[in-house]
Amino acid sequence: MSSSSAKQASRKHRVLVFTTPTCSWCTRVKAYLRQQRVPFREIDVAKDQKAAKDLVRRTGQMGVPVVEIDGRPIVGFDKPQIDRLLGLKHG
Image 1: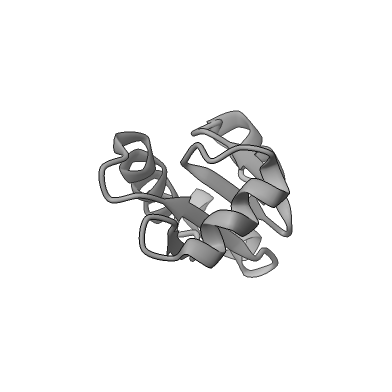
Image 2 (image 1 turned 45 degrees about the horizontal axis):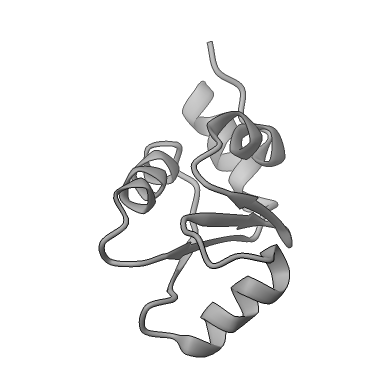
């Protein structure tokens, strides 16, 4: 049942993941979101300079990964915060 509740939770949210190709934590956060069946849009800030500037404007820094859920940025792979904003429950 947890996968169906994850699907229900993810339908309500807009999820963006700001990444670079060499970022190992970016790979981990994307794998986690896929495991939870949360659809997301990946934005490679190494290729998209406009997105990179926008990321700095929104978060005050250039570090990745940044997961943005419904316009709220989470810097780094902060699983508890991601789960909280997506309404995911474990256990």
